[in-house]
Amino acid sequence: MLSFGDRVKEMTIVSGVGNYTFAGAYVGMRGFLATLGAGATCQYCAESATSWEIGEGTINIAGYITRDKVISSSNGNALVSWPSNSYVTLYDTVTSDLLQNLVRKGVTVASAGVLSVNQGNARWYPPNNCTVTAWDAWVGTASSGGNIGFAARKNGAVVATGAVLAGLYRMTHTAIAIPLTTSDYLTLDVTTVGTTVVGSDLTVRFTI
Image 1: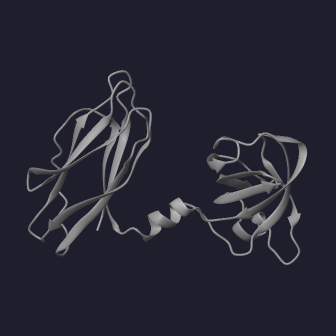
Image 2 (image 1 turned 90 degrees about the vertical axis):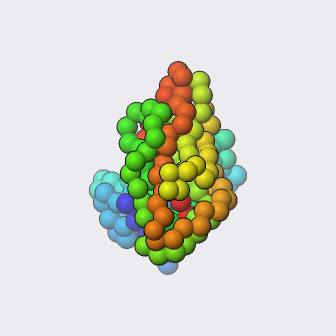
């Protein structure tokens, strides 16, 4: 689970693609370790001159934050390799992708493990009358040699189809329209998988 803190901004020292070592909070601001605590995972933005990196990391009691996941960066969305002993400004942030996910209300349906073509039988019944207005999807392992295709069924009939394309990890937020009453139900089929790498851990989120 991600942790957040107000007015967290700190100078760090870093070499290459190593960890960001805390070197003290800016005047009037707060430090990562003191505010979020050891073991906390947070989103950060690192900046120095024209180089920058937005990612997720874990705060260590020894006084540094790891660089676990890069979300975007000036280095083609890969880790920035900083010059030796660079001083880099680091502050706690919330990415636009996370904010979009937080404001979207919906339900998720998952197919865990290595994927195979199958017709889903787990049913989701809405608690009240509603309309599914969009959906998005992501996988734990990307496929190759073919897309990961899926279909939503309403009361057994296919009403929408989508796919996470081969080599990618998610399908972007896509508008659909599925009106539902409390007597309706949705199921999810896996319709295609990769031929070289089939892919794994499909999650589909229906936005209501």
